[in-house]
Image (tube, rainbow, N blue to C red; front, side, top):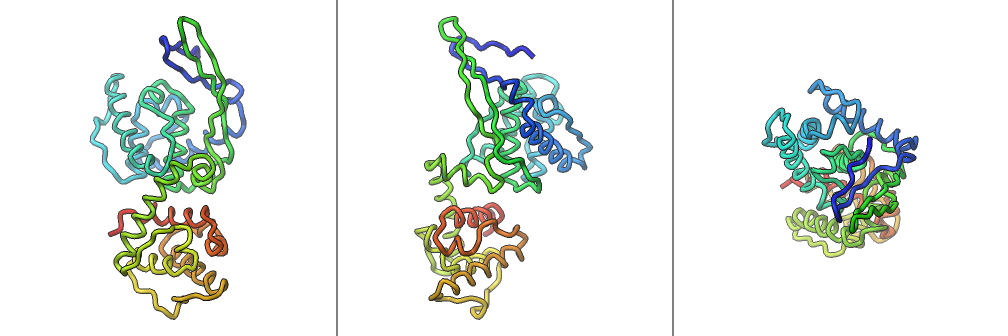
Length: 295
């Protein structure tokens, strides 16, 4: 495929051929394709190639509706380019609305996906898979080389950049904590609003996410509020004194989370007690993802 050369001052990104053959990149494509086909089995949709099968928005619409439970008001089948782009606009608008508050870089656009830009399509799919906690294990640390082509004064200029598609399978928090402190603050505010919406019912207020969950008391009470039951006081230490008592509380909260259908938290209870911000945020973020619409 010959890339379409950019207009004056516009920029095109082209996947470096060496990256296309990278085994981890191929494995990521395969896992994403298998995941889409599992999700859309009832629709009798079979995706074989991400570039050719997703660019027109039809499959993306079905996938997003299945994952989110939303119904998007778009025409079923659209053959015209304008119709396809309109559908993509709707689907991407809804996806961005979900992903942007959680700190995702929006590395895709209607034009990039419609022009079959594989990296843009895969970036969107990885974002959706992680946001909806897809039951798949994505290969870790997948990155690709992109060639950026820009035309200035009639001359083509090229630069090489590295684009990261996945970091670790922990979740997006590693990327946020290490590379995007500004975005992390957006997530923090969302989490604060979420926990206080519920804890305020007990006249409790959180101002410090890092420290106020460390003894496990608020975590236990929050789980009771989210799942709608009263946690008997003999199950945990309301005023824990020792490290062991705090670990007991956090461990108990983790058990309540699993009873509520969440996966076992990746963090260790000791990490939360030791004020490890990554671990604490990750636990709260998982609760937020599952219970954000709970009253």
